[in-house]
Image (spheres, helix red, strand yellow):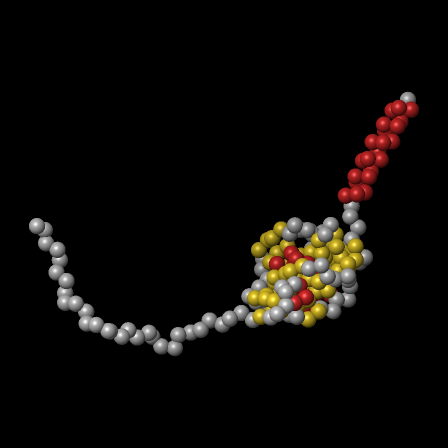
Amino acid sequence: MSRYLLIIIVGLTIFLGGILEARTIPQSIESKVIYNGSELALSHTLIAVDTVVYAPLNALVDALRYQIKPLEVSSRLQVTVPASGKQLVLQSYSRTVFVDNAEQRWERNPIVYRGVLFVPLKEFCKAIGLGSKEDADQFTIYDQDAVVIAKPGKPATGSALTKVAPKKQLKPTAAPTIEMVAPLPAVVQPLQAV
């Protein structure tokens, strides 16, 4: 009898330990978000869940000067990028998002932590057309058409990166001219069969 009781207790301990271990508690992290060479002032800290960095949506949207509004029909939020007109519609705890009315599925879902909606930062940046680079102490986001290079004389690390505007395409000013150096030979006669 005591043997069966011991087996049941050990089994329950292993089962409940697996359930509790699977539920990860978000951890606040001391990391900066850099955009266009400037640190974004966020009203909440970033959090990490299973090594994925999450940012508070409202604070991020305000810092980037994007527009956010709740949709009347559901509990979804719409984020609009004023410069491009790109729209992102998302809902907490749903991996399905809509970018310009096209459905996408994120690897991680937005979560609510302590009453604040957090989004996976890398996936959010990708959805709205921003590039991203994650270092140990900062998260750098940049426009996709910009080139990220290291400052001259410094190693290419996260703190030495700067944004450089893309090169503009040069338009030709006039049609190219062809200058003849030698006269063309007379008309070539076709080969005749022998």
